[in-house]
Amino acid sequence: MVKDFLEEFIPDLEEFKEKTMKFHNKEITVAEYKGFSGGFGSYAQRGGEKHMLRLRLAGGQVTKDKLKFIAELCQKYNIDLIKLTTCQSIQLHNLEASDLCEMIESVWRAGMVSRGGGGDFPRNVMASPLSGVQKDENFDVLPYAKEMADYLMNFIKAVKFPRKLKVCFSNSVLNETHATFRDMGFVSRPDGKFDVYIAGGLGNKHKLGIKAAEGIEPCKVLYYAKAMADTFVEYGNYTNRAQSRTRFLQDTLGKDGLKKAFTEKLKKVFESEKLDINPEPYIINKKDDGTRVSGKRITAQKQNGLYAVFYQPAGGKMQPLKLMEIYNAIKDMEDVELRITPEESLYIINCTGKEAEKVLEVTQDSASNLFETSVACIGNSICQVGVGDSQELLNMCIDAVRKENFADGVLPKVHISGCPSSCAAQQAAKIGFRGAIKQSPDGPKKAFAIYTGGCPYQGKENLSDFGKSIVVEKIPEFFIELGKMVSSENTTYDKWIVDNSYTFDKLVDKYAEM
Image (cartoon, rainbow, N blue to C red):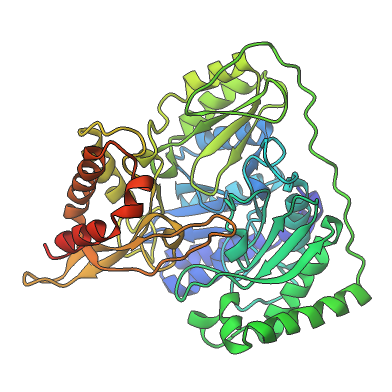
């Protein structure tokens, strides 16, 4: 990054320090502090005693230098919890207020400027995690995501948005970044161009994006981002935060009206600005060492003889010592780096066969099957706005299901959010949950509402609505019974659900009534 922004941003830390001290002295409210601190990528955790810091990492790319810096930072400040996020960021948790400003400045100087990591700002720009190394990708989108990330930093202090703006890039039909239903998504095509989608989003009243442009040249992406920013600023809702995200422009302007407004802004941007880019391509010329590896956590790259190793810590939560273990394993490996995925996991890429074997060894605590790769937000034990403890539920389910020793694929990956904010993207999951309260004869009980049938794949997108709620303690039992049903037919959940949706619904009804 981006030393150019340090001179502009670092003086702001004095005000941040002042506000943080006022918050801890009870001179400003939780809401007042949240509205300010989010702009620095930091929030107070539940209870107000500890803090978190979210690092901006364009496309989820973590070089060895950045990995070493984060690991050493955790040692210096005794940080005991790291969270990989669904926006390809790293969150540092349980931070002391007295350390916060010093820590933020050091992180910024190391090239991970957290400004705008929260609040009403352009957020971390996302890209398909294996961009540049994936065999079947249309083309490498990461260089354009990095240029976009730098460009959007210009809006942090210059423009007041109604709410946050999420921009992403997709390199294939896998649509891992949800580019067809983000605030703005650049979707790669086989002909080397992008289609542009705008005004999609999850959360309350989720919507798929609308295709606003087709077949644009990659060098022109910044013009489209500026047009989206201008459209959002002019037509976005500044008075009702519940309806201030870009997806609500589809309601207020209509789809055709929104596309027309965006096109008019785009025309003006092309007439008045020079925003063409020509980023350096991502080139790996590393030699094959002749060793061949395979397995569930191994992906062969398009570079001959190189591999990406998948690592999924449960719920995306990591101990800082693990970062240092990974760094020590890869520090002498040429061109090896990390890519954080939009599903709270990571890849260690550009490994030769022998290097991949070493990385597999140091990451052997990774999830061992599809169900254990399930996604969960940080949950209400830490998040101020969370309703349910997503991490607790995920751990309960994994512990219960492990005892059954189901075959891999009998249960799908599950996405669990603690509240309607949808940080775990449960609407796009095959099975998802959202924190809720369920009324019972014994009074209100902690529960999660279920979502089913979501799909993020380009051309097959489906966003589901929440259904009935199941009390927390019954959800592991629900998965055990579901797993037994699927196992009895010697198949996988993906195949079983095609002909058994009625049976599945009856199972949900059974547990919702308990």
